Length: 456
Length: 98
View 1 (cartoon, chains in turn blue, red):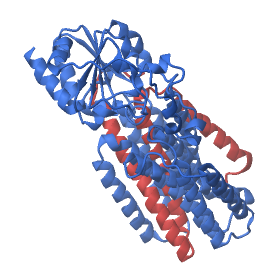
View 2 (cartoon, helix red, strand yellow):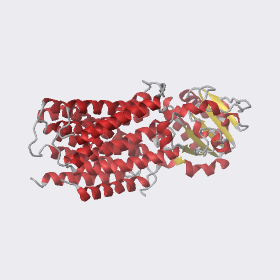
View 3 (cartoon, chains in turn orange, purple):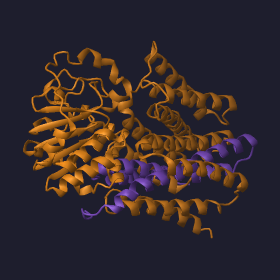
View 4 (tube, chains in turn cyan, orange):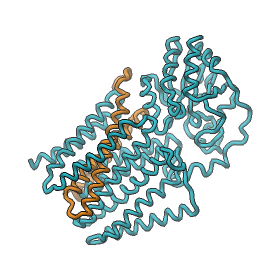
């Protein structure tokens, strides 16, 4: 029996690593989560048999409450809202790590000073991940203004952070930390998580969520050392490093450095550089003409953006693409790394509509094909196809990798109105000679295109 | 206890493991994988169960209880949303396993 529990934790750690490995390739991804899930079940079950455990009633009740609520929300949430759900579940993990640290600090019975220090550091990281993720959730859910500024913000943030660190050191040094110091420490750490996330704009949220995901992993690993629990140590560390790399990949895809994301609001410098020299006019085209043009094209690339997902148009767009394919048109989908709200989010949304993933291409794979493309259909995307990212060094998005749709023979932009994109930058693509605008809601336009092309 | 250099070695090796797993992932799997790694740190549930299971005072029991609620939310919610996302990749055929 005594070996059975460590063996279960060992099995869980192996299953987590193999599961994540399988999740990293499309064909095996579905199995991966099942493997990892099996690991979680084994570890959770084994934990009931640890020596000197009590409070079983409360443990089971707590699992039922937390698990039940998460099950219900997770099953019902729309695919477009996935990023904020990941944020909230991640925040809960950070909060749990902080709670473990709080219990251990209240007991004050650490194996050595090192473990006491690790508990405090884990508590700090976990608390920041918790409150920061909740703010990220509120922003993506539209419950909160996108970025929030107040006077002396940086000074106040710095002050709160310094105070948190002072209290952290107090807790690390204390023989048995006082209840008030513990309370104050957590209050400050949670406040810092909120303050740190407030000024960050919506466009940068994916990077921030990914960062908090990595931080939670790290906090879990540290508390794993404190509790001498190898499954927590390994799973937490793996997620900590994987999450850090994922954060870097995302930041790179958006041409933002992590420091940039965390310490300056995107909006603060856009007004100055939003190009006023953008000239010419946008030329409109009707759905019937667009349908005819695309029906007789050889090669069509569809570039979907978050706007399409919000309009729930992905099913209709795929129906339209299938009709084109039946007519012998070569149709593919081009996905910018940050299309949607997170890297890969658009792939999930297209997969939901039934688009096979061999029709979906990354930026690097497809950019060379635009010059040979007859029609590029941009639907609900804006900043990721803005050629100023290549041409205008003064633009805030200069240097960001973009889809070169402007090189296609014809560009059709489906858009609700004449407004600017998420970043507030004028899009030079709309004024090009080969660009035509097709105004309307994504869903409505897709419907029209489907019915028009049937008559061609 | 796992401590000293043993702890450091485990930390280092697990760190490299995570880095290796992610480094060759196609972009289409970034969101599911972030969600999947979010599920994996749901193992914090186990730690919260230990904290609650060994709680001595009312305050410790309360904080431990909150910890288990949050940990269970992380694990269950993380699993459900990841599974829903990856379910969609199952139906698509084509591209063989690399």
